Image 1: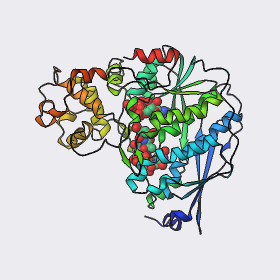
Image 2: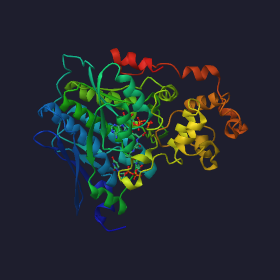
Image 3: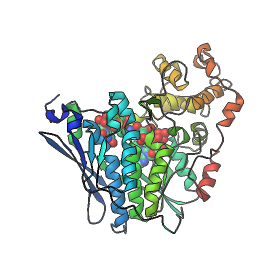
Image 4: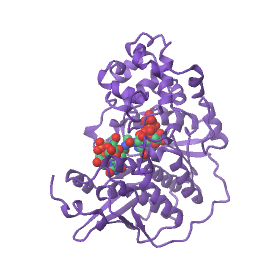
Length: 449
Ligand SMILES: CC(=O)N[C@H]1[C@@H](OP(=O)(O)OP(=O)(O)OC[C@H]2O[C@@H](n3ccc(=O)[nH]c3=O)[C@H](O)[C@@H]2O)O[C@H](CO)[C@@H](O)[C@@H]1O[C@H](C)C(=O)N[C@@H](C)C(=O)N[C@@H](CCC(=O)O)C(=O)O
Ligand SMILES: Nc1ncnc2c1ncn2[C@@H]1O[C@H](COP(=O)(O)OP(=O)(O)OP(=O)(O)O)[C@@H](O)[C@H]1O
C-alpha cells in the first residue's frame, strides 16, 4: 500500500463529492475523453477515461445526438471511479434531463449492487445526485429503424456467435467489440464478417489507487460497452445495435437492503429497456437478440455452428492486462457452467479438447456445481451463469446420454435431486414473450429454436 491520496481514501464519504465533468469530443468524433473528479475537504483527484471509436469511412459529423450519447456514456463509465471512494454526492454541473437523472440513479443502484454488497457499503447505492434540471430530449423519430444494417456486439463467447450467425441471415452485419481479445478476433475471423473495434482506456491512476487500498469490485461493464456501441452505430449510420444478452441475465443473485443484487444487471431486460428509452429518440434501436431464449436453447444451437475451437466464455480471457489472460481456466463458475450446459450437446472427446480436462471429475469444482444446481445453501455465483432450472435440465439430459450416463458425477446419489421431468426440460426450449425484437429480427431469433 502507498499513501497515494490517503486523505481522500480515508475520508468519510459524506465529505466527498464525485464530479462527472463535461465530455470532450474530438472534431471528427472518433475520440471521446471522459473527465471525472473526486473532491474532499483537503484533497482532489482527477481522472480521464478515453474512448476511441473505430476508424470508419465517411463518419457522420458530431451532432446533438452524438453529444447526448457521449454524456450518457460518462454517466455509465463514471461507476469505475465513483466506486473507489463512494462519495455521498454525485455532481453533474452541466445538468441532467429527467431521463438522464433516472439513468444515472439506476446505473449506480443496479450496476454497483454487487460491489456494494461485497464491500458492505449499502449507502454507496443511493448517492444524492446534484445537477441542474435540463429540458427533456426530443421525442422519438418518425422513421422506425429498418434493421437493414446492424452492428452486432461480440464477446467471443457462445452467445454472440449464435447471434451473429442468426442476424447475418436477415441484415447487413458488421461486428463490434470494445477492446481486442483473442476469442473475439478468432470469432470474427471464423465468421468472415468485418469487425469494428473501439478502444477503451481506463485512467491508470485508478489501478494505482486500487493498489493503495481504494474500494474495488464489479462494475456494469455491459452498460459501458452498449453505449460505446450505440455511439459507433450513430457515427457509422447504422440504426440497429444488437447485443447477445439472454433471458437468464435478468435474474439476480440475491436480495440485500431492498435491492436485487445481479452480477449481470446491465445485461438484464431492465437495463435494455432503460437504454432503449435513451437511444431511440436519436434513431438507434438497441436490442438484445437472445432475450427470449434460455441458455439451454442457445447452447444447443451454438454446438452445431462450427465455432467450438474458437470460442471462449471464461472471463479470465478478458483481463485488461494481457499477461493475466487465460483461455479456459477450468476453475471458475463460468467454466463449470459452460461445461455442464455444453456436455449434453457435444461429444465427450471434443469436450476434453476444449477444456483440457473433465471438470465433472474435479472435486474442487463440486461446490460450484452444487451452487449451479441449487443444491446446498450457496447463492447463484457472481458470474455470467444461468438459472438453476437450466443447469438442472442439462444435468437431466446427461442421465441417458451415451457418453456421460455412467460418469460418477451423473450417477452421484447426492445430485439426483437435481434431475427434473422431461416436461421441465422441454419448457426451456420455448420462446418467451419478454423481449423487444420485431420483424425479421424476431423471426431470426425464433429460428434459433
Ligand atoms: C476479466 C474480469 O472478469 N474482470 C473482473 C475482475 O477484475 P480484475 O481485477 O480481475 O481484472 P480486470 O477486468 O482486468 O480489471 C482490472 C481493474 O480494473 C477495474 N475495472 C475494470 C473494468 C472497468 O470497466 N472498470 C474498472 O474499474 C477492476 O475493478 C480491476 O480493479 O474483477 C472485477 C471486480 O469484481 C470485475 O469488475 C471485473 O469485471 C470486468 C469489469 C469485466 O469486464 N467483466 C466481464 C468479463 C463481466 O463480468 N461480464 C459480465 C457482464 C456483467 C454486466 O452487467 O455487464 C458477465 O459476463 O456476466
Ligand atoms: N468486449 C466486448 N465488446 C463489445 N461487446 C461485448 C464485449 N463483451 C461482451 N459483449 C457483448 O455483451 C454480451 C454479453 O457478454 P457475455 O460475455 O455474456 O457474452 P458472450 O461472450 O457472447 O457469451 P458467453 O456467455 O459465452 O461469455 C455479448 O454477447 C456481446 O454482445
